[in-house]
Length: 394
Ligand code: ADP
Ligand code: GLC
Image 1 (tube, rainbow, N blue to C red):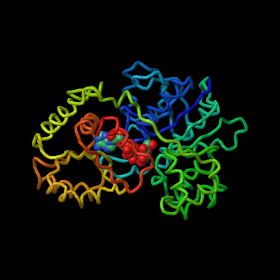
Image 2 (cartoon, rainbow, N blue to C red):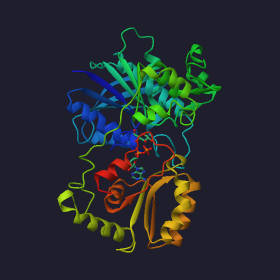
Image 3 (tube, rainbow, N blue to C red):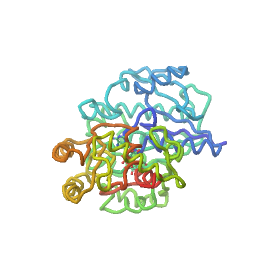
Image 4 (cartoon, rainbow, N blue to C red):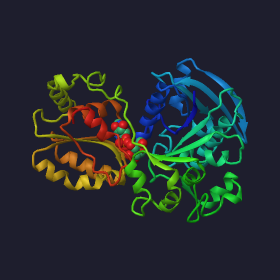
């Protein structure tokens, strides 16, 4: 049985800001069903540690790294048989807000330190230095927060194989050169073909340069990121490693996203009883104060950031509404997008609904209740919402 350590900074249902969390839950579970022994490693955010305690899990080991005391809690990913390790280190991870930002939406000042330590612990687990009897054959790293693991493993003769998955090349973990010095990484890594990126430290280059294999979340994105248009400055590095780079399309968990059994829906539906989809729509319209039986209902769910084409959406919303469409939007993100959307929602009560914030249940009801899903992304490494919509007949 192949043992895999799956390192990730978010996993559904414990902590989620986007698609990474969904894939970090569904992929390990699918692999476990194929008889791989997958263990997830996640930072001990407050909600996750609380869930682990409530599930009666135990602290397995405790050790020091520099000034920090670190514990590893062993638990299970809720609702699955997948083993989950939480790296508990309260000074770094017991914080409000989301995994990367404080409650005002600003990046934590010490993100480089937080995720460097996370990577150290991942590397220790990988080579059996964390005091656990379990050791992986492969370490699967995901996005920049885990990208130093292959760097730390580089000089171990009996290290496991390493895979680095790019979920989104737009997020690279870039920090000033002073941060590189303060992390205590060896000077030999400060090279343009290693961790240096135009005078700054790039976490993601660690994964791109040092891992045995690179994957990304669709074949098309694997091609796109080797071009200057979509390469975010890393197309050269990626083209150089193209014989190690593979695009593998994400799957979705068709049990979590299943209109026949979805507990978030008041009415369930499927191919042979599609009528209930209309009931879901009426229910959604009532829930959000929209006119029932209005025009076609269009939905958008997503992070309000440039990638998602929100500015293009804002531009066409008045036209869509004038032509009699209804609009439901759910998301949160940058103020430059939230403000004009709020203004539009005020101008079109009963026809446009805006929910700012994160709401898992509502995201299911929107996916089910809409006629059409809007996803005008500038680029999309894979995108899960369009697949969820197809699954819900939207
Ligand atoms: P990305 O990972 O780039 O954000 P994806 O389409 O891969 O895009 O995945 C986004 C995931 O996050 C989907 O599961 C989507 O429903 C969810 N999501 C995004 N914003 C919200 C929100 N405000 N409330 C609930 N779910 C959200
Ligand atoms: C990223 C991408 C998205 C992808 C998700 C899961 O956040 O933006 O397109 O579906 O990761 O891999």
